[in-house]
Length: 282
Image (cartoon, rainbow, N blue to C red):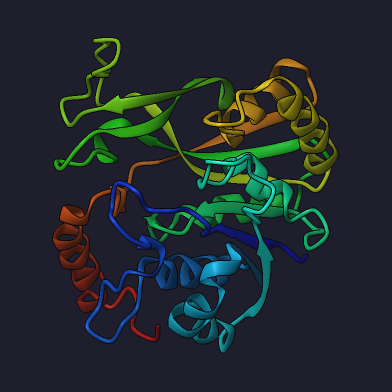
C-alpha cells in the first residue's frame, strides 16, 4: 500500500540563525533530511512531499531535493507567505503547513520536521500502522524528554499523556531547558516524560478537519503572532472524537539543530551511524 512522507521544511530557523533544513552534517553535503528520508523509504514509504517556501525553492532543490529525487518520488508544496498580515514574516505554523498538502496527498502519510533526526527505527511502526489504518486512526512516535533536549538552549516539546498505548492529551510546552524544567512556569518534568517530536501518522480525512479549524483560526487568532500548530489540532481531534492516536514508544536519542551550537554533536552522531554501517548505501 502507498504511503507518503510529508516533510515540513518551510521554517525560518530564527534560533539557528539560518536555514537549518539545508545545513550539511556530513563532509559530502548531506543534511539530516537525507537520513530521515532514507529511513522512511527503507520502512516502505514510496513518495516524499516537501513543504517549503517559494523564496527557498531554488536553493532547496539544488542542495537537498534533487539529490533525494534520484532515490524516491518527490513533490513540492509551497507554504506561501504572501497571505500573512503586514509585519509578519513567519509562516502560520505546522498545522497550516500540513493543510497546504491537501491537493498533493491522497493516501496515508507521515509528517516530520526537516531538521530532526528520529532514529533508524522510528518509521517502521508508523508505516505498519498506516497501511492498516482506517480514517481517523492516527499514530505518533513518542520520545523520552531526556533524550530530546539541547545543552545549548531551551526547546519546545509536545508533552504527552499516554494511556493503554493511546494519546490522551498533548500540551505544547515552550522553554524547556536541559534540566527538564520549563523556564516559563517553573514546572519540572521527569526525563522519562513522553513527548512528541512531530512524527505523526495521519490519514487524508485530516484535511477537512484542518480546513475547518483554519477558518476558525483566521477569525479568532491574533494573526500577528499566533501559530496554527499540528499538536494542538490533533488534540482537538481527540477531544472532538474525530480521531484516535496510537502512540509508539521510541527510546532512541533525538538529534536536531535547534541552535547552531548543536551542529558539532549532530555531526559526530551521524558520523558514528555511518561508520557503524547503518547508512552504508546512502
